[in-house]
Image (cartoon, rainbow, N blue to C red):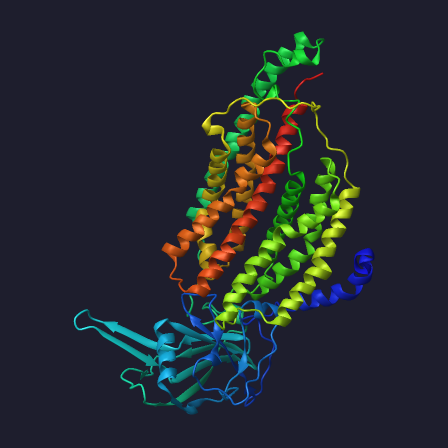
Length: 607
């Protein structure tokens, strides 16, 4: 109670520490290095993780494979962003010194059992790649070599790389580039081993240094891993042009409704009102049809108003969160080749923007006559955090059961829980208190009658299902092309740097959602159906459902992902992604419809 009662007491003490822990996670491998070396100084090479090439989120510690390993494993202290990215760095046996070349030095001798050989064979067949880190530069390569040739006779050869050539470039006293190669190396065959036979291996390595005129790592034209992963995506003008055309058509369509159809409606309704302006209120409804006749019901508060306000509050929070992430990316605050910094920034912004969800939800809840504001705050803070926690629990349990490095350690879980308890939840309560205290009565231009009007039967094309299909498909079509590149970045090996285009497409998505919401709301009111509150949220919010359907298509047709670990993570977080888009676009849709409805009824002459 002390924490909630005196927010300043905990914010002054704990908030700076939490911000330091989160903001200190932005230095990921590949960021401009600050380490300076002298000739002969040791350069530590950290082994990090291995995993199937086509399953980006299925990673394991490098030392889980039967490889050269020190007697005592010493791990590197990692930031939150690196832990969330699945990094688990440990010191290796490689001895590298600054600007000193090495020619085929022995790393270790090994005697592998048949079970260990089978483990390596399985890893090679699943295209396992490894990741090492030298001076914050990731270097990657495949564990082994696989060759299949011919149909009759069919040959299947498996080989292990037992020699690695490291190439490092330096400028002055700093390392600019690091890479590993097996170009001139012959793999050691793992075929033909008897079950009771041991396999003797000798692992070796070479180090070659060369000077470069490039002064900064960011000035290199190649990727940070020398092209192991695909290059940065190019600008895709087809997606941009398609989205722009759709926006112009929708904006023009809505403009026609506002300027022509509404003008005619208002002229006709207001003209019909003049001869009967002295009559009673009941005469007002005689002989009319369309949206004018439901003026006494259109602002009737909906059922489940607490849930509606919670949806609007959390949706507003994610709108601020998404905008903040994109703006930070535009300002160059993230390393384009790794996602650890983005993960950390998302956690920080989510915690700080909880005040927005509390304010918007409590403010609107009090406006529409809600009294249980404490329950509303609890519902708001649980609307996303509970589904996220349940999904994460399942995904993390699967990773933990399979020994994946994507399973978060207990210390990281406690840190994230602390951030939510000391920052997120208190800010939601504080925002809710401010929203409740600053709320004014709901501004409705029409008086609502006590008895609700009967709604006439609606044609099939004005049903909720049709509105959700149309309202969800059009915004989805505006981002469908860009969505492929985002999925290829998050669930693949592409590198996304087009944050300006992403911001533009994000604005297009919100604009299309607002326009289609206004159009669908107008058609609904024209059919004398005043139940627009929830319909406006569901109609455009259904875009999240289309995004989830696209994720299923992407998994089946556009990716090579497989296995329980990757499948559970993909569909678990794809469900959450669709849910987040539902909240965001549902919020935009609702407030656009509310603004539109207020506009048309303010301009309608009534007693």
